[in-house]
Length: 499
Image 1 (spheres, one colour):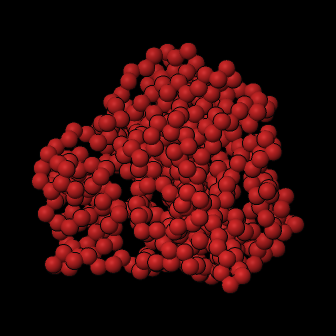
Image 2 (image 1 turned 45 degrees about the horizontal axis):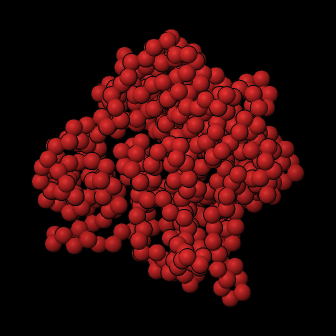
Image 3 (image 1 turned 30 degrees about the horizontal axis):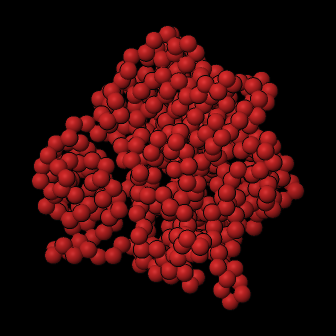
């Protein structure tokens, strides 16, 4: 299958420009600028959550931190503001501390309403019990990675979750450690603390996707001069992203995603090696900005036309497209484009900080290509003109850009380079601005700061692309994650929208 390199059903006029587009950004680029020779360690990862305090269990219902009988953004803000502090109303599990467990309880109950007698009422949409004749699994945990279906020892489908979370992140636990440990919740692969809002793991939970690659070789990389098999290379990575290939409507909920959403959360753990197989690891997360929205209209060439300006930049589409930058591209109804491409930037110029507390910034160019559920109706983004929801056969996501660019002042300020290797532990805010301590980050940015870990990373430059993987091995690295049943002689998917 050539679904990475050659987006399907693109018209003749638009085919070549789209191939060039994928080739240009379908890469992993890792750049480090040398600094001086020593480094002073910052606070340990545990300090993300501060000192533990004991107090009584919250007197309110689970998730309701302010006692107004509903779980919403007000409760989320209270938990975030009082994280690791003495705050009785936020200790939903009564274990004596406000931590990631209480946060996850809030997320899993987000949207609930309680009566005066503390009786919960259903969330916005009624729960399904069957999908195309297959029972819906009843053990779903929004913090745990799972495939689309559960099977017995013989491989028979027992039940379906109706959605999946992409590749299994536990496949690289031997390299990066138990999934979730980095952000303080071992085993919890979904819902890190730096969500853009609680909706990301409630109303939009189904959209979380993992992309995992392992045992990569130098032949799948190139150096700064474009020579294959030279320079540093990515040997493994697991990445988290939040995707929806449609206009962005989430049935039954007010939240929007897909073409209508500009900001999403992300996380990456990557193993970077020099040619002598001396490897290091970087762990970084935060927000990704996918910039202005572009639609490819019928009979149109190139990427398409900007129809949604970048809210973070001055001007309109005409001025913003002149300088390119982060953008998300979908096919309009009637066009030949049936996938979507997001080119994200996690620290664009309009989100960088230069305060006394910052040490510089790390810019992660993070992009993906995926199979679209629906083409976008330019007259109403909330419409979902499905391509074919019953045979969603290419339920795949490709990591098409993962570039790490370190601001040169950052490395020199923290004196992180020694013997050609970079080591640093600290924090970033949600937009890649670097801080030595969580206190400095909190004073300057969000109460939720993202732990940044850089261990033994080689200074230099390297590129990884899924297309390089395919060229080197003859195998497409993306995986289809759908499962099917036959109903009335027709193939039916066990994945339902949105996913």
